Structures are given as structure tokens and as C-alpha cells.
Image (cartoon, rainbow, N blue to C red; front, side):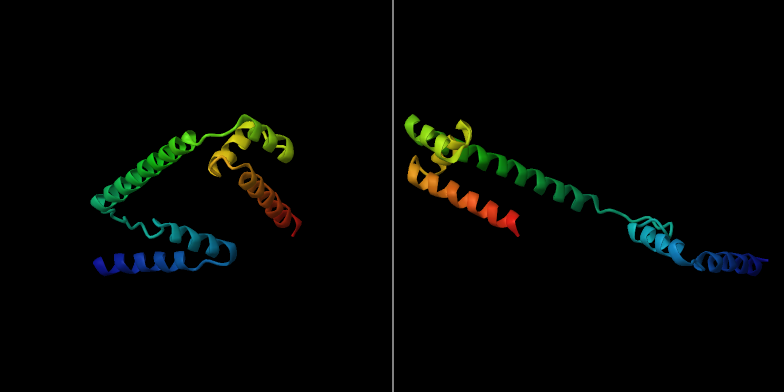
Length: 128
């Protein structure tokens, strides 16, 4: 009697395997996602927690680094006339002009050069 049940199960499995065209492709893609064979994949919770912890730590470190960078930039002395020059010459808003000027240690020529090169790269990229 047990042998008869196995034979029926095997026949059912064989019927499931016979898939054609789009149905076969869909079945294959679903199996790649997992769960297609009713298999439960165990997750090592310690590894998962470790990975999440590392991710959280790296995000926190990144935030702290950005905050430190902002503090350093805020310390850079800039002239209002330089900001106005960059705004008028490069047609950027005040915030952008100040930012670029601070990133280039308050040196207007270096800031202008950076913005010109940045515009040139944008034109080259969009022109292709």
C-alpha cells in the first residue's frame, strides 16, 4: 500500500515538471526567488544581526564624518564679494556659491575653476 502512494506522488511530481514556454520560464524564475520547492531556508540570526549592526555602525560613522566635514567647512572664512562674484559669473544660487567657495578654502579663482570644469563635464556627458 505504501508503494502505491509513492508511485502516485512520483506521477504528480512528473506532471509538475512538464512545463512549456512562458510557464516554464515563470516557474524557473520563481524557483530562483526561493520557496519553489517548499524548502525553508534558515537564516543565521547571529550573522544577520551582525550584518545589521555593521551597517548601522557604518551609517553612523558616515553621518559623523559628514557632520565633521560641515563643521570644517563652516570654519572657512569667505568674503561676501567673492560669493557675489561666483553667483553672477556662474549663475548659481548663494548657497551653491558659498559651498563651493568654502570647499576651495575661500579662494574664488579655485572655486570658479571648479565650477567651470564641472559645467564642461556636464556638457560633455549630455552631448554624447
